[in-house]
Image (tube, rainbow, N blue to C red; front, side, top):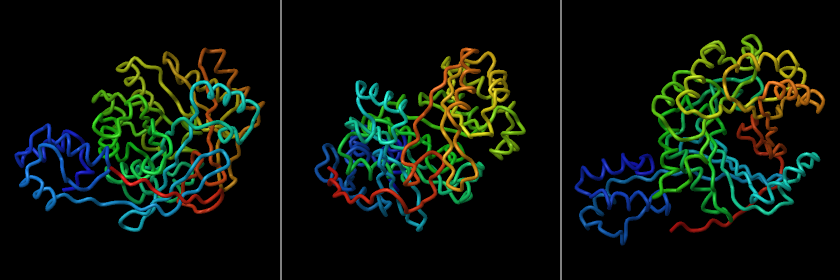
Length: 375
């Protein structure tokens, strides 16, 4: 029985079957998920027989940090080795406080790559992986070139946070499932880990600060909508036409744009929220004025926001747009009342930018950190 693989409800059920009260089960959960401990000494309300049973039956697998690399802009990429020798990555993203964020915005307008490094960090967001590799094979993504190897278990997802949090100098206040893998191809484990992340007796990260990204796994989008989760959902859209999307994202051949947007509209109707589309910006490929108009037509009747993320393709096949091309695309959307945000994708020189996670070990500065003992 691996307690790190259970959410609160599952923990209460498993321990309740052994006569352990709900209150004590919650303390066990907090010991494991908030304190990061694997012992049950001096746990209030836990009887000696129950403690001995836990010591005999509780298993605690773990992952190992292979290395940390930090980029000039303050992003830190962690390479983890799993129990089977496979490797995955997570990225610690530094965030300033609200006042400094306004200054950061001005710096980014000036194109200053080291903007984050110049501002004090108030908190972190952690970008976690959900799979080893990815089966979707998006043409602009390095992770997709690894192929789909396997899903991460719940505890392997949670362990990424625990390992980083143990040594972080500031709190981790947000989680984004935008690392290696397609989260909705590992739906059960991703949603279970998200529930643990937002538990008050666990890491206590606000549900609205947990973002799950999907490239368009339609059945799971429908399921997510029906289940009524409170996490943020972002839809990755490489193109607004079927032909171009199929060229960039083979998932189009499995779940087409019409199917995808049918599920997105159902999600929007159920949540009454503005839909966030993540749009990889590729120079000379998907930013023409007619492509922008196709996006306007595709989203007609929906309240949407478009996050524009410059492509970072290590192979050099795809290049980011120039300012004029991107402005032309944004102007078409603006005329139709569609807001756009140009998202900063940091850590490029260490392979930590969006679409570049491929378990590489190059670039940046190696960081040695003495971990803080849990508990």
